[in-house]
Image (cartoon, rainbow, N blue to C red):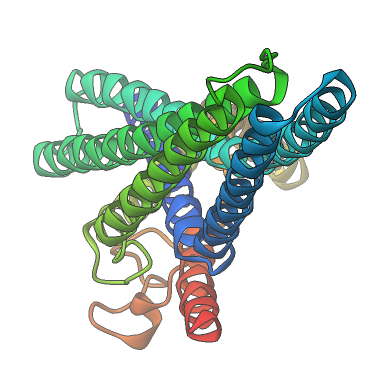
Length: 352
């Protein structure tokens, strides 16, 4: 009983790590596939065009300042130049704030992927422990290890891709913030328009590169929602393995409880029919309570995932192989996976 319970607990924790990683990958895929993210970056590029227009205006102000004659005219021309530059700085600050908002959302996804990868590392440790337990199926354990490594690679690659995107946006933010706060003297060198041109060029290049990087990452994650994707199949196998292990542990507990009840009945020494009945009932109840306590103490963490086990495989009440009943998942995590795919597909259809 102890081995079955331990196998069930470890396999269930592995399945949880797989489900979490799959959800995080789907979150990233949905975010990158949503209309709002590319549209938002497109709006930021339009903001850069507005900043460019300030550069054209500043060139005119600088020319007027250089051409001004006399202290009063020079002072007035310089003030107009400074006012126009302050307007450009406000625009640049707003641009940095808007890009930061988008970047924060992407960084949150990156952090979630990092946590998912850590959970998969823990899952690999559980596989190591499984391999040491008598009764663990070697083929199942090997496939679980392969699935965990595949999900970990997918999560880490997605996180690296997001890191490149957020790094480019961070560079754009820094450039826009610098323009917002820079202080420049008014002279014949046209520093103000040059600063705007430099900032606009940097922000434009970085936002365009970030958007292109998101496109590549979106293509890499494009089939995450598909039921035939490696991510989906790996996760489904992990959850089904956990369900099978939990059912096996419960069947072993039931068998042990029944054996204890039979032994207690055989060892009872009835004085009369009534006392024999009482003794038999008492022995059975005690064994049942002991069996239940064993199951509770050893399987409680495995069952905490919300699994509602069905009859153990191979019993009279179990599903017939290949039947419609067998194809219907009993584990709520499997039930969750199916509408998630449908919803994601609907969202993409609506986005188009």
